[in-house]
Length: 190
Image (tube, rainbow, N blue to C red; front, side, top):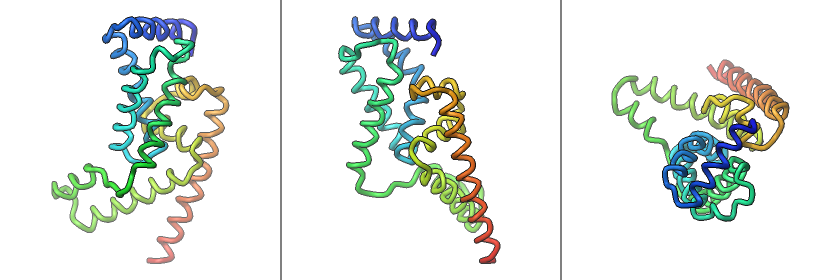
């Protein structure tokens, strides 16, 4: 993160500490998608990720006074999102299915067999992403799903850009291998 942006974030944190809700709302606006993307990488469920990110922002607001270096808000928030996500993992007792899948089937846009095929393919792809190590899964989620640049991801994760690039490359290699295995298996089965 460049110095100017860090100064702006530090200023927003200081204003939020003084009780300016608009300043904290701006912090939420700036980091909401990143927090949701990171929670999704950990949880693998969009709805739980949104809940975990929301819980993390509430906790961050309550603990704002504990942040020693306001310019390091992004990394501090990331750790809170991770803790919040882990609480959801521990508390999760039932498997959930996103409403998007039900809406497509209910709308009749696809026939039942096409909907089932699409759902199965989507589940396979998500399973392949979930099987990645957490560091790679996080990079893939933030880059491909949330559309953040390598630099933005590096700033949020507090790692060098080359580390993000290496994680993305390693993830692509693993995903390609897994997807090729799935394709080969599907061809052999049919």
